[in-house]
Image (cartoon, rainbow, N blue to C red):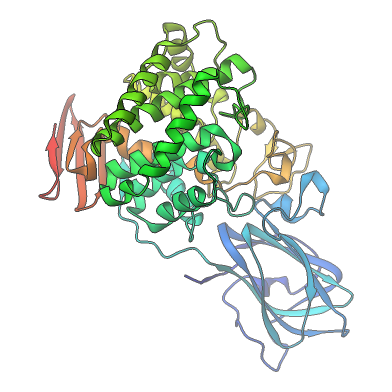
Amino acid sequence: MSECVNPQRIITEKNVINSKYFIGDNVLHAVFNTYNCAIIRNGGYVVLDFGRELIGGVIIVTQEASRINAKYRIVFGESAAEAMSDLGEKNSGNYHSIRDMTVDAVCLSTQRFGDTGFRFVKIEAIGADITVRSARAVSEMRNIVQKGSFKCSDELLNEIWKIGAYTVQLNMHEYLWDGIKRDRLVWVGDMHPEVATVSTVFGNDDCVRASLDLIKNETPDGEWMNGIPTYSLWWIIIHYDWYMHWGNIEYLREQLSYMFGLTDLLINWINNGFYGTNTNNLFVDWSSKNRNGEIEGVKSIACIALKYLKKIFQTFEKTTYADKCDNYYKILLNNKSDDAELNNRLSALAVLAERYSEKVLKTVMNTTENEMSCFMGYYILKALSKTTNHEKALSLIRKYWGSMIEFGATSFWEEFKMEWTENSARIDEIASGGKKNIHGDFGEFCYKQYRLSLCHGWASGPTSFLSEEIGGIKILEPGCRKLKISPNLAGLEWIDIEYPTPYGNVRIQSRNEKGLVKTKISAPDETKIIQ
């Protein structure tokens, strides 16, 4: 769905006459006069703020230029500072989409430029003075019906839920992308939190199935998806979760042959001590800094995948493979290293796999906002919920994801650390007076400085967490045929949740009335509710 979006304000400008005409609902078409136009002098520029993260481009209506070879330099930015940057400065670049371009400024024209993720645009005149009638963003976000909802007595949590949903919607296209500026790709190992948000907000959307099929069809037998073993394991986990929520047994049946091969590959890998051809990449998370800890993280993910594979094979009465999976699941369940130094993220995976010690549990329980992660933070929240520490989880959501909002986020980021906020400017400001640039001065690994994506679907974890864990929803039978619902208010006064199922929404309304929690649940006839 194409939507034109007006600039909300001017961040900064240089050598621009009548810049006020960039703001407001100016005519989106050239006309044969120069009234109500702005003039960008040669070498001048204007930086526009469109108010929220968008995917698409910009339409510029050019009235006239003082020379025939006039050009625009157009720079898109997810932060104001990025829009002001030059290629190569602070790791800025045209990664996976073009965000910095030089194009002809054609007189009496209405032209569209760009297809990327952005909120800010710098329009610079090169080689001539250029008269501009208007400049508007074009949003190309899919028009998807939002089926699920979450409201509670805490407005910050409501805002976080909405921004997580919006972050994922920006990434929902034919396939489910990681990010809309960089990482416009199907990284199946990153999709799990994003798919959970799709289920709880948008329902059974085709982009999930298309993405799972794409990565399967592009990965030959005997190879790992995206070249990383754990990514194939996440593919299995996503398939199981998707089946439990939407109940499409025929689609799951289509995966059996491939799952047989993956099971054999996984078992061979385990037997070889997680070594072997094309299997030495033990990647779990960017923060995992030692091999022993990394192996424990791999074991935890493999343990969850084997547990789910067993259930899938039992569903289709594939006893031999179900028994294999059960055997290796038990081996990994009991084969844990209490001496391994696990950070809070790997510890959270161990808790979710039910292969943890008191030391590991304590590591998760002691997590602070300074140790959170946009991606793995989801699993820390889930581990806290599994151990009934819902109030702690809500506190982390408020402090961590809430801080991104404080610094101007309208979508959640690829990564964020609380230490970045110290003496830093917001993303809708140009750093001055000794302040740091929160987008351009930080980051590590693949997300250094302006290469950092400020719209990454894997950061949407709080959205599905609030719906499912605070709603206390557990799917007991495929296709949501049976749900256990036991809300966890965790200090909230009330919650009101709409949760999509194949048969319609389940609505949960729960309120704390003077210490007594009263809950009202309505559900489709096809869904049995257990409280």
